Amino acid sequence: HEPYLVYLPNAFTSKHVNIAAAGFRLNGAQRYPETIHHKVWVFGSSALYGVSNADSETIPAYIERLLAEKYPRRAFQVRNFGIVGYSSLQDLIQLKYRLL
Image (cartoon, rainbow, N blue to C red; front, side, top):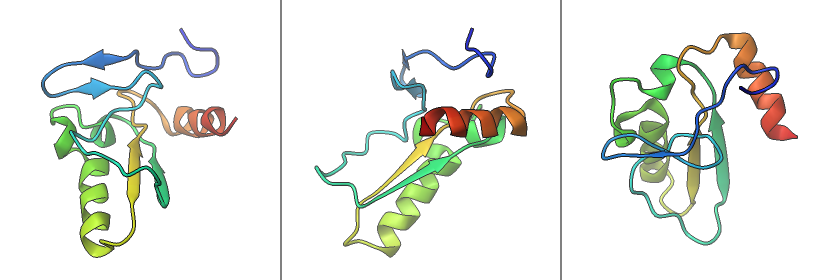
């Protein structure tokens, strides 16, 4: 249970779905440089989370790859804060919670 949000995902590791200890879904086996120039946070529910997709096949993973291809001299990190079953109000509350 998480106050105001109802729940947040716990850390989880498997072949296709991996969730960091901070509660966001990973985008596959990307290795990031020491300095990340641009960080993008993406919030949403089941579709964004990628319920039936592997880590590297989610919308945030595709966005991260597209940004890396378009801007090869910059380092982008796209965080998948999508959570299955969340409403837009929970997304907004989670954004405020993360900014704290």
